[in-house]
Image (cartoon, rainbow, N blue to C red; front, side, top):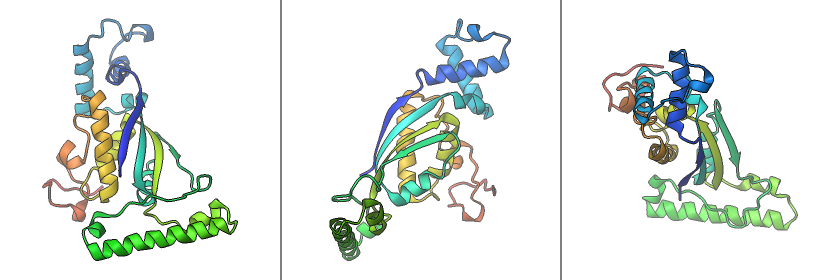
Length: 227
């Protein structure tokens, strides 16, 4: 089962982003950036940045997540996000899967006969995996029999700018269902600690009123463009 925990984040994320932006727009020196910087001024700066799409100050703030219960199929999509992102993932080379957990797609789970066959296929792969290990095959080779459905765990760190881009792509209804669920769970976590920074984060149809999916648009948005 999917589980997302926000492990750490840059302290006072919105204040730091606002301070970085303040340097861009004022003649204050570095040691004066936080002088008389009231919560109202911080909010004003952040709202201005978000409305203007001025994203570079966002790179100074990062969020670190622990993610459990996603499939290897999902993690393969997640690690394609590389700019401003760091990953540490549970290794199938060093960690033996004595009884691997797996993710069942909802459209399979909704059909009892197919779901039973799916579960049996997972059990068969587990049996072969254990047989290989018992025969002395190293885990790094035995893992070749494990499926994309096998669940995995990661620690992921992203800066705010990278998160915005991630949410634009992966909160979209066109995104694959599992990574969309992951993105929405991550968005819910960051909004708890930085609501202003992420107030308009999400699929572009929600955040900007624009869809970039062209002919593949789901129909939710009327302003359709092609990237």
